[in-house]
Amino acid sequence: MRSLGVVALVFALTLGSQRATAQAPAAKSGDAGTSGVANGKRAFATAGCVACHGRQGEGTASGIQIAPPPLELPALINYVREPTGKMPPFGSGAVSDQQLSDIYAFLKSVAPPPSAGESLTGNGDNGKKLFLAYGCFECHGRQGAGASTGPRIGPPAISFAAVLRYVRAPSGQMPPYTTKVVSDQELADIYTYLKSLPPPSPAADIPLLNQ
Image (tube, rainbow, N blue to C red):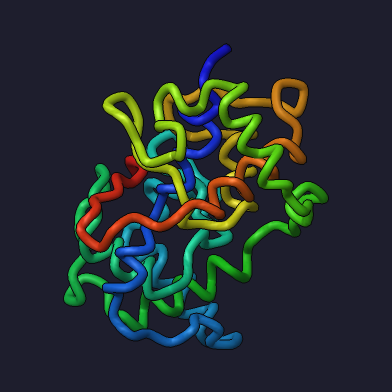
């Protein structure tokens, strides 16, 4: 059976990592109120984000869905400044930290309501069994630490909701996995298992999903 790790949890490396979060500059929370959301919508268009990510961050053929934002604002800013995928870097002269904070608020405002599966509680012990049973370890190592054919995916750097959305409707080269292949509960279990794993050392380089 094809490795679920290749599909289901590569997205957990999408916009940042724990290292990126730690290095990110200080920034406001992104909850800027009505004016911030309006400013963010304008900045999202003028900075050219819509070209790859759609007018409401819903994703396109050339860029992933980024609404709702899968990471906290500081990690997002860090990634925008120093991306490792196909996305070009945007310096503060192109888009300021304040504009990114407003964009973040805008993306949160257009986020769809959570699905029922996003509130599931995972079982880490079962997730470990599924991680092996579905062959995720073949590409990502037995503890999600990465291998020659796949990146590190443990522990995930983003929310389960973001992982769940990507598994069901990926925007990269991976095929979608429906609930008939892997259920929301099974994904929650795998996610919980990966979250229980120790974080990488500060020197570890975690690849990010191509934008």
